[in-house]
Image (cartoon, rainbow, N blue to C red; front, side):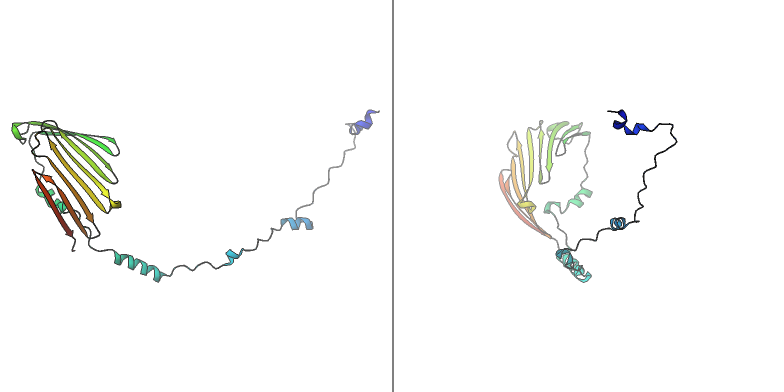
Length: 225
């Protein structure tokens, strides 16, 4: 079989003056009907039945003003007075100054976002009983969103004081427990309290043992202005 029949492209010499014609150019876009049809975007799909439904009208400003007026009317202008023992706190902060003699040092350490401890030193003072001129105390405190717990140890006196505050009934009430223990046993005490408050008032119930006798008390604190 001749090689020219297998490779017909090699029958033309490279130095021949005959040049093969270029390929035909493509028609420009839009010159034919098919091109015009392709350039036209398709029509949007028909709207659904849910889209055809009219959107709800915006609330009228009169109705919004009525809602704000009702919310403002439901809020009392009298604030909550807080616990009864805090009623004179602002006065005591001004007239009862924390005075002492000697040297007092408090070293605190935050062990976690909820737990801390404090080392307290009091040196060269004449304010301590039994003629002592120095003291040391160790205090720990833990806080969270629902309350706190605190304990203080005094090695010199051999005493331990503790407090526990805990939110009850989803924050509607606050339970408090106060303990005081010593090696002598004469000044031991235990006191339990429940604080209940609302928008303009606070009530408190307490029961325990202090100074060798039972203690019972209640109070009601109402804001007037």
